[in-house]
Length: 120
Image (cartoon, rainbow, N blue to C red; front, side):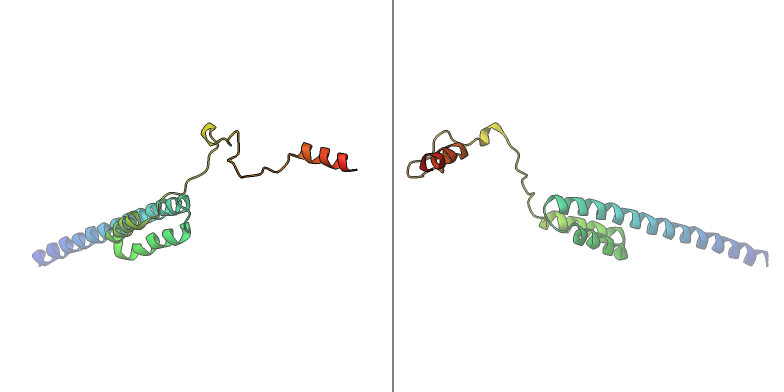
């Protein structure tokens, strides 16, 4: 009977260890999916797309565990759009000093007001 009791205790300890390991992997999978969702959200918003849709893809991948999340992130990296360029004012983007020939420039506000005074 001692042999049966010791085997039962060993089996019970093994079952507890396996269940704790499963819980650790579930929590790790959820944390990886949340991290991926945050990164996908920020990356999609930076690229001018819906950040919420990208984040939901990562959160739905929790069902498939860490490999599912990795697949979603890799798919996003492959199909994501180019970054949207933000216009920054620089010295190279100045207006030209002269207009090309054939284009008539509108009068400035000062010239326009002077023209009104002349006609009055």
